[in-house]
Length: 511
Image (cartoon, rainbow, N blue to C red; front, side, top):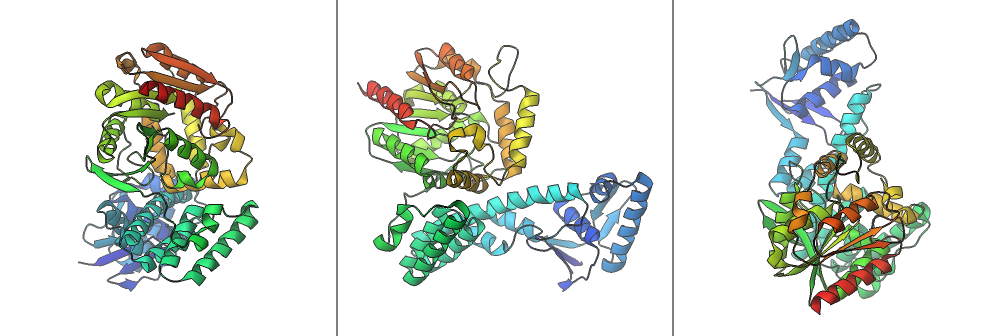
């Protein structure tokens, strides 16, 4: 059996029986990569549209026939085709490094996955004048890059916990290279360099970070970052993992208050990167003064396992239960922000004995509009918004809608863009948001039997205030408070008004 391998992580390369194949055909190389990734037959029409989008049908058919013939002359019998499809031959032993990488991630072999990921998908390669191929390659690159970031984060945590600081620093250096403006990753690197005995290297990294932040954002590193060289071994709040339903969930706990407060954010989160922004950090720290704060990333995003399907509201509610058990919490105040609200509503309806109170901030009961629910986007509006968000992924996508008060802040924009890249990929978040679009928990609102506080800013651009009023009108014992401002994020704008209401509510529960 012929061994046929395709390297996609980096500039593409094809090898037969471990010998490099000299292939000067860029479209031929693009086709081999696409077939290797497809794991099955691909329609001739799809290939033709992808490689020759503007050519007449008869011309395209002739070009494809010539290309397949030239590939056969160069590589031998590695392709199988019929009148309608083309595929890599089942008679060859196929090895694709991107598949190996994903298999290592899926099996929890994160260090091996990091070793396999040496460059971005098809780094620097394009067949030219093939926008559909380039778009497919971009989404594939972002998905693999997101998994590489997650794998590196896990290895840094594991190596640090095992006191293998030199190895932790090496992997943290790769993280910092993937996102040079992230102070969280820079702190991982500096901290582990110090603990490995390389204080001079840590000082160089701090200076390099300072220069990047100054040139790109015109800001200086935060005091916490600068203090590392003075304190030497300052530790960040620890991220823990718990397994439930076959999925590993990343969570953190902060504070020692008498009341537990679990905060479930909207469609995207990252429990470590959230603390990098000073405003978000101040908000979370203030919540931790009101009660012991529990944070976690829902399955599919952030530091939790990336899963093959989009998480349902029911699955996220089950994850809430798993995390509360791991945190040793028997009774909790749930804080559901935006799309986090429906899962909190579901958990409160199903487990009233474990919920002391429910806070819903800028949330909604249904993800899209219906004749009897005009408080959300129509399906066509939602699709247009989702396409716009996904196409801008990699930058500070949506910040003008989610946090207009921060839209002009260069550092906040860089932080939000970095959090998005670390938390998910464009294709994966599209699936998450499509599942949230179909969410509908209106039938559960009447079952909520715990005190409920509904907070909504009157100018919110992401979730209309009518959605908040609807929640309060249909949940027994709910109190609705309309706040000033147009920021969708609780920590943006006047966060003190939010914190004051939360504090009063929680203290009232204790009384």
